[in-house]
Amino acid sequence: MGDHFYSTDGLLSMGKFAEVKGDLLGAFAAFNQKVFEEGALPSKTKELIALACAHITQCPYCIDGHTRKAKDAGATNEEIAEAIMVAVALNAGASMAHSCIAMKALE
Image (cartoon, rainbow, N blue to C red; front, side):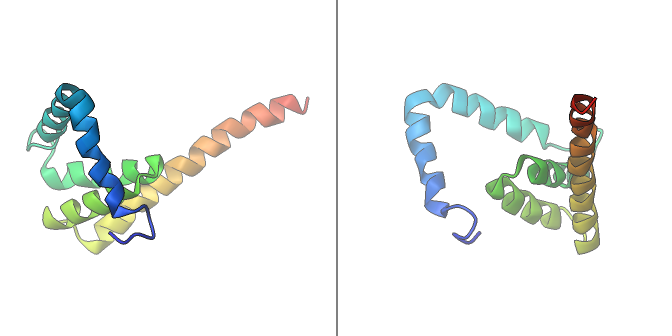
């Protein structure tokens, strides 16, 4: 990942986080690892879901990492692009849903 997203050096601060709250960081890491294990959903599907979610949460580290992991799990470029477009649609849908608040305020 290039520094045009966020500085890759920013991830180095996780060492400080581990120093301060390593037990919680470790619990998160274990949970995260468990979530992405093969289960009812195959790893490829989980990575495509994660990639779509990363676009909605707008985490550049997650976008980069889950794109690579989806590709490694066998996802095609088309599948990756389609998962991203699902996220785009859902994000736009949320804006449309919230537009009802504005329309109500106009009454």
